[in-house]
Image (cartoon, one colour):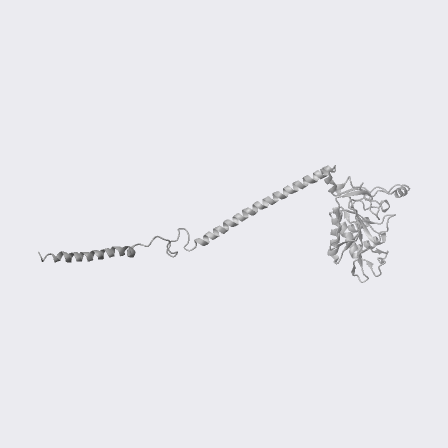
Length: 356
C-alpha cells in the first residue's frame, strides 16, 4: 500500500499540466486560426461585374450621366423655344387688338390698312399717294439735301437699279436725285406735278474737261453744246447719261413713260447711242420717251422721269396730267388731231399734249 500512494499524486500532477496546456491551446486557437471578418475586398481582389470591362465602371457611369444631361438640356431648350414663340404670338395678337381698338375709338376700321398699300391716286398734277417709300442715299445714289424723296416702291427701286447699272458699267458713279413726291402726295412746292409718287428729278452725270467724273451736290445746267453753265470746265457726261437712259428703258420691272429733257441734250444722247451702234429699236424707244413739253421748264439741268401707272393701280391711277386752264384753252384752238395709228392702238401723246 505505501508503494501505491505516491502514484496518484504524480499522475494528478501530470494531468494538471496536460489540462493547463490544453486550456492554453484552446484560448490561442481562435486568434490564430479564425477567418478574417467580412469586409470589402481590396479593389484589385474584387471580381469585375459581369458585362463591364475590368476597371471602367466609373468612366461608363460618367459618360451615361453626361449624355442624359445633354438630352435633358435639349428638351429644356426646345420647351423654352416653344414658350418664347407662344409668348411672341400672344404679344402680336394683343398688339393687333390694341391697334384695332385704337382705330375704333378714332372712328376707323380695319379698312384703314388700305392706306398703307402703295397706290398712286389721280393724275400726276392732281392726285395723292399712299404706301410711299423713301429713297435714301447709298453708294450709288445721292439724295440732294432737303429733297422730298417719297415715291411708289416701283419707282424708288427702279432708280436704285439704274444707278447701280451705270456704276457697274462705267464705275465711280453716283446718281444725284432731287424731288420725287411728298410722303402722302399732293401739291409740292416748285412743281406742277410730282403729286402721285410716279415722278422723279435726277441730275445729269458730269465730267471735267479731262473726262474725270465730277460729283456735285446740286443740279448742273448745260448748253446745247454740252458745256456746263456756271461750272467752268465741266461737261455733259455722254456715256453715263446714256447708260442711265438705257438702264431705265430696259428695266423689265417698271415702264418708264417719259424722260423730260431739252431737245438739244436729247439729240446729243441719241447721236452718242448711234455712234456706239445701239440697236435701232432701243434708240427709237429713247427718242419717244425723251421730250421737252411746251410751256414747261427747259429741263437742261436734270431728267424728269415719269413712270407709267402700274397695272395693279389702273382705275385709281390716271396716266396723264390734267391740262391746266390756259393749256386747255390753247389746245382748243388747234386743228383736229392727227390720224389714228395703223394698228388701231392709242396714239402716243405728242410733246404739245403733255402737261407737267
